[in-house]
Length: 69
Image (tube, rainbow, N blue to C red; front, side):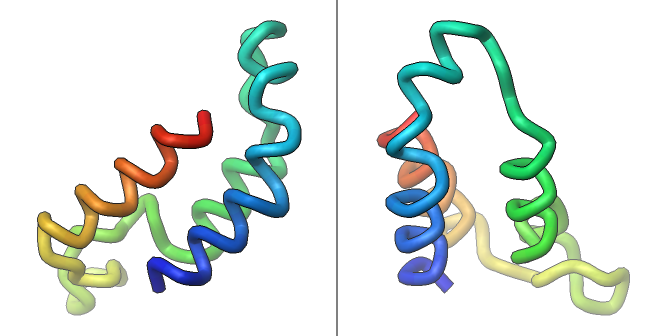
């Protein structure tokens, strides 16, 4: 999962992050992609439709996102 997030960030976020930050924009396409890979429910139990990731893994994901945006 972390590898796919890294690829997404490199391909779809990093090239545009500076410009988006300057304009204070958070494009729907990026939010939709984050939802598509399950990040909005990353720590929610699979029983309730989430990924059930441990907090440590979720922290690594947030760290990666923060590094490029």
